[in-house]
Length: 262
Ligand code: GLP
Image (tube, rainbow, N blue to C red; front, top):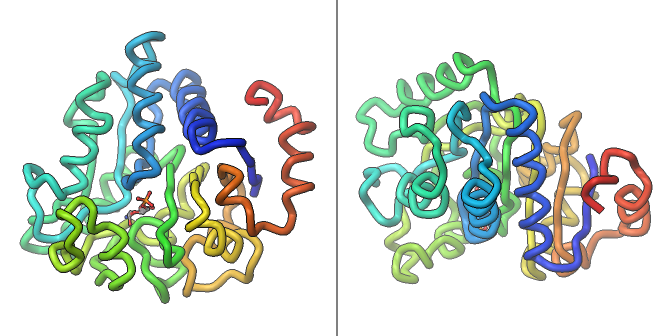
């Protein structure tokens, strides 16, 4: 795991976008795992700009989102399909048939979860999975006690998560669906590379626990310590409770992998 500290949230978003763009240029048929939430908006803004100004080509790219609320159709403004359309899909040349999110309206939820896993496998697995972190340490919607080997499945959301995500529902946590379909922790760990982005002081404590604390299903992001190629990008505020920052800064300043991003 590498922890890359950037001076501001804007620089952290820019770096995440640059890493994704590099991966896409190297492999035009990249299978890209996508995340939602406020943190990702800047990343998608940069990707849209790179498409517009530098011709970053998504024509062959396939995408898989981490999660979707149960009970919301793609036209619902609270749905993650709607979020993705507004933040990224309509700004780049992704083919609609190459964008995948779980179907929150599926009648047979277990079958939909199995089919989602099968679709990921049929595309050859996820090359690069973008991740945020919830206040309770979740990745995707893998709430506390999610099995570290879990696969795509239905999950009930904690009160804290529904409060965190209330902004998309007029600020009313009760209007946030209580259940979602989410890739499992095991599904996420199967991706070839993970890229987690976190900013702001309110993420500092949970990020330090996830990165430097013990691996525990209470904090699903801590499972990323098991991943062979995981990069955590944070701004100074989110890095403020980490203990190993001196070493993390040395890595960014000295390791050849990071030379082009310094
Ligand atoms: C939701 C998503 C997570 C995301 C989290 C963080 O809960 N399911 O994948 O990491 O939001 O959201 P924000 O970036 O708004 O803090």
